[in-house]
Image (cartoon, rainbow, N blue to C red; front, side, top):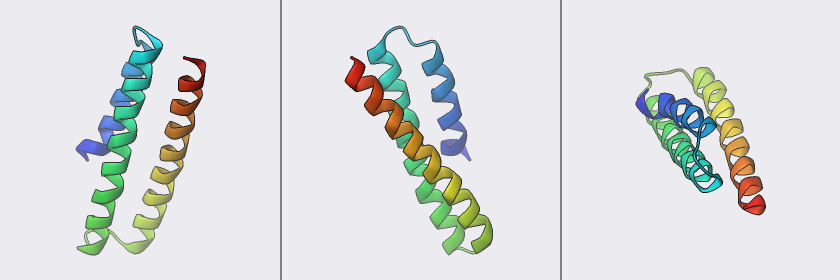
Length: 80
């Protein structure tokens, strides 16, 4: 729960970043948290805490978010 909600928190912080470098840094933290969330989702599935269907849905959405974060970070690095 913590890593999943931290993604949004860091993205919101990035909205008011003080510089491009600060924006990239905050988005990179969001990416790390998304990666950690992927790990925790696997643990929840493997321990049967969530169903395979729930895991697949959540994991798919998280992977999409990871792709968007990677794209955003790459775009900003190219502009910097």
